[in-house]
Image 1 (cartoon, rainbow, N blue to C red):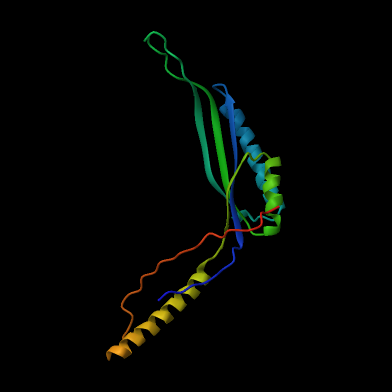
Image 2: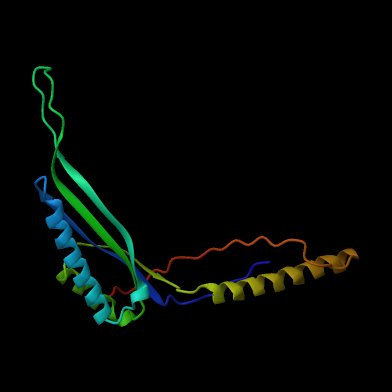
Length: 179
């Protein structure tokens, strides 16, 4: 049997980040302080717009050295690559529950230092209810079909032996863009 349930997305999920690069072998401390300052300003801004602490989660934090490579001429020995600076990338996953504030939040984080905003998705925060409804409908249809087959064959329906569950969650496509 097959069961279906429809649910309207109630949460927008987005990844917001700060990426910074700075030259110099000792640049790491400077950009790390700058990134922390910007990310704290972004998180404070999100909270001021009603985003709960539980809906802001660090996704990644990485520090990568940047290298200077040398060109070798006439087949001579090349000096090894040298660290010429660093790049720090810090991202948080954010759930926005108030759809009226999505545009304001996405626009506002840039003013607080975010230079990476990606992966906007509209999802159902707790799909359990819709899944349960679909499951109940599928079992009801399967039982009805089994009873019809059994009745036409002179058999009777017994207890369920197995259930195989497959979920398909289509991604919503919105006809109107957000402001």
